[in-house]
Amino acid sequence: MNRTQGANLYVKNLDDAIDDARLKEEFSKFGSITSAKVMCDEKGASKGFGFVCFATQEEASKAINEMSGRIIVSKPLYVTFAQRKEERKAFLASQYNHRVGS
Image 1 (cartoon, one colour):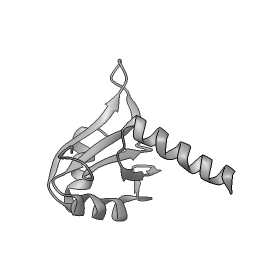
Image 2: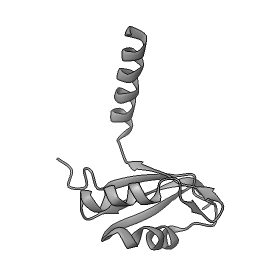
Image 3: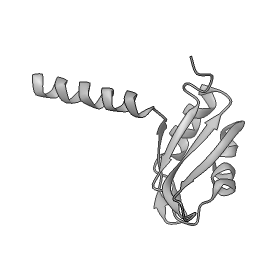
Image 4: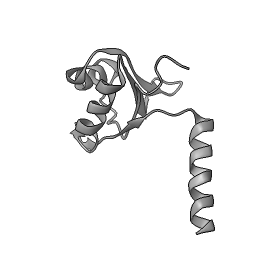
């Protein structure tokens, strides 16, 4: 099992003014951050999302509860636990199949 399982957060709807340092600063009040990264394109411009990894799942959960919907600079954040692409696709497919089957 990945050691960051349950402690890595996906943060989207980031303002273009947010960089790695600002992302870490905004989330640091919820616990010990092992990494904070805003994803950028090949030209260095923000893609509007990033990841924050906490030392524990409890700290990550607290950050989700406190930061989801909070406006930073000019946009409300969407914060959730990070999932691998395959996991996310499987989850969405099972949700769809459940709804169609009902």
